Length: 346
Image (cartoon, rainbow, N blue to C red; front, top):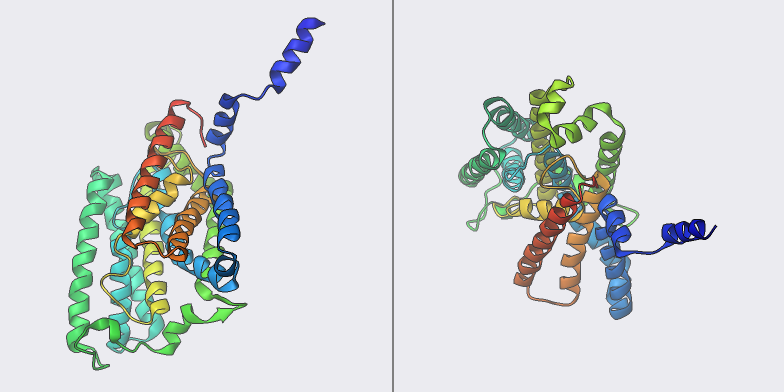
């Protein structure tokens, strides 16, 4: 009888180890908790600025377009790879679609050409990684540089031959048609359209990564590529598809970004890959592959842009964001390493 009571007490005893195990299993709790803390703190400290519809709409809009890139990056890391080209794909896409429109290509034709071209390059990079065996870090770094160079070339061409008589200051002053800008600048219920696009894409990929038999293969490949292949999964084809998805989502982000801004520029999107990696890792997706959830990556992304929102509200120096972003990524990587040692799939 006495032993039974002791066992029951042990089962109900609180211990730090149990908390760590819970967090390791539900790693999306980390960014979600940080977001809740941020909301409470700024609601108390800056109620007149923070508790406004304008601030909420601004925060969600700022997060909405990078959300496309974050989803693609999450798939890649779960898949056991990495994609460092995503920021440059965004940059190339925004310049390319702007130049095509300026040169007289119909809006939807320009969007289709841009997205399909980026998807094709994503396929080629996937073939290099999955088929040839090139390291994804090197392959995507190289393709990213190529996208950046192409973006600069397209920018120069559009600047010289654009039909809208560009200002000497460059392409960013071109007048893009309202029919194009409206795909990102129109509002419904006080929120611009990219917020709704992001919600739809997030919902689709949350369901796919948790319910779809095909997309679940990325977890098996990320955990053990050889075992996945032996079990009948077409590893090469599935990995190539991940690069196509990542490139396509990043290209769509570039198109929406230039539509939102109203003009193309060679600075838009550059560096977005670091934000995406930070968001995905703080959201619980492991660098080692096979671990993490799409909802965790989304919470991680929201937290990253909450930090940006906080710095803007407090009028902090813009350069401070890079420091904080780097520290967040470093902390996330350390946590990932510690949780991986516990061999718990989050």
